[in-house]
Image (tube, rainbow, N blue to C red):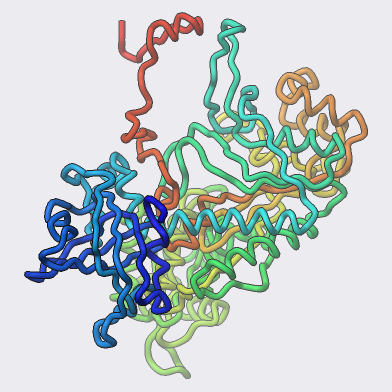
Length: 593
C-alpha cells in the first residue's frame, strides 16, 4: 500500500464501501462525542469525515492531535445512515472508520484559524499567507485562476497561435510607468530593467515573421497601489498578430474571453453583443472610459438650459471656458429624500454637491420640484424633462464644472443611482470596446503637446490624419471594459517609420530622441515590417471578476500589501554592504545627512 494515500479526501464514494483506504491531509476540525471522535480530514480535493472509536490505537493517537496537523489515516470505508449523510460535500454519503493514525507534520498554535469564516486583518492574512491559502475558499480561487489560464492557452493554440517567452531582463522602458531597475555587476553604472510589458519584443517578433504570438506574461511596474492593481507585478495574456485589423482582434478576443467568462462565470449572464464606444462618447455618457454597462443610465450634456438662466450658480460656472452641466437621469428617484441622499453621496466623494429636479403628481401633468426648477422656470424645466424622457416619480441630478473634475464622481454616482433604484443587473458580465483613443493632449500648465495614450499606435487615417488639429488625432487603439474595470488594452501598431517620426515630431521629439527611446524597434521597422496589432488582457483582474472579488490580492498567491510590502518575506530589504559594493552602488536615504 502507498505510504501516504490510496485515494484523495474528495474522492471517496458509496462504491468504496467496505474497502480499506489510506488518506493524508490536514486536520480540519475534531468533534468529541464522548466515546467517539469525529475528524474532518482535508486536502486540496475536498473533505472526508473520519470516525475514531474509543479503545483503538487511532483514538489514543487522535487525542494528541490538533487542528492543522498533517496526518495519515488508514481505515475502512462505511456508508453513513441516510439521515446522517452530508449533501454539502462530495464525500457526504460515506465515512472512514479509522484503524491507524500517523502524524506527518505538527503545527504550533495557529495565528490564523483555517476552519470557519472568521475575518482577519489583511496584514495577518498576508504574513501567514501559506495558512490563509489552506482555506477552502482561497484554494477554490487559486484553482479557478489555474483553470482560466489553461483555458486561455488552449483557446490560443486552437486559433493557430504559438507561445513564445520574451526576456525578463531587458532595458529601461519609455512606456510611462516606473521601471524596476536591475543594476549590472559587469557594467558599472548601467542598469537593466524588469519588463513593464513584452510590447517591444512582440513587435520585433512580428518583424521576424512570427505571425501569431501569445504569452502568459509576467509584467513589472512600480505602481501606486489600489484595490484592482498590484503595485509590483501582474500577469497578462499578451498577443500579437500580423496582417490583421482591429475587427479581427475584437472577434478573437470576444471568442477567447467570452468563452472564459461563460465557462467560469458561476452562472452569470455574459453579453453576446460587445458594443464599440468611442472614447470621448464614453466619457460623455458614462463619465469614464471603463463604463459599467450593467447600469443602463446615460448622462447627457444640458448646459444650454442653464446659460444665462435664473440659476446663478450654474450660469456663472458656464461663463468659464471648458465647463459644462451634465445631467444624470434617475428614473423612479422622484423624491426630495432620494435626491438629497445622492447629493450627500457626491459630497462624500469630493464634489461640492449635485443639484437636482424631481417630478411628482400624475403622469399627465407632472409637477417639477426643487430649487433649480424654480430658478430656471417652467418652460425650461419642461423642455428638460421631455429631452430626458422623464415623468412623474422621476428625478435628474446635475454635475457642473470642468468635466475632468466632476466626471470621476459622476461615473460613480451614475452606478450608485442605478443600484439604489433597482436598475442595476448584478448577475451579468457586460463588455464594451472603447475605441478611438486620443493620441495627444495639451499640458494645461505649459501648453505643450504630449502623448495621452500609446505613442506607438497607428493614427486613425494614417499619415494624412496628422495634418490637422493634433488634439483631434485618435489612434487605432482600444480598451475592453467589463463591469467598470479595464480588462484589456491594445492598438494596431504604427509599422511605418515615416509616420512614426511625424507623430513624435508633433509631440516635440526629433529622430534622435526616437532612436534613443525606441532604437531597436525603429531600426527593425525599416526592414520590411508587416502591419500588425495586438493587445494584452489582465489575468489577475479577469480572475478577480470571475471570483466576485473587489481586491486583486484575493486572487494572487503571494501578493504585496497596500504599501507594496511583502510582509511574509519582509521585503523590500536593505542590501548587504558587500552586495552594494560589488554592484558599484551607494544608497542615499531621504533625510539622512
